[in-house]
Image (cartoon, rainbow, N blue to C red; front, side):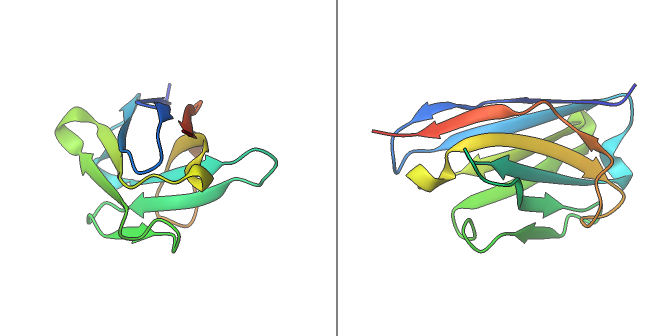
Length: 117
């Protein structure tokens, strides 16, 4: 069955960096869009980034210039490089997949990112 497994979260100080990974199984990511969402405490889940099958990328305004998403189809993996982290980046980060960057069929279980001094 389709599975998405995130890793790479943790505790980091403001200004620091983390790299999240999401390994897919049960399907080949080549023809699918892959997105990262996050959910901060007490807030709704929001999309952070998306990369489609043509490797076009999309970012929310609050992470543009700080976060970069990429994909390695050979490894069936999508990444999120997060630099210059801020306290407001704290939350659970989920990866998701779908046929485009507008609708997602499958979700991972999430990985916690905490930005704090």
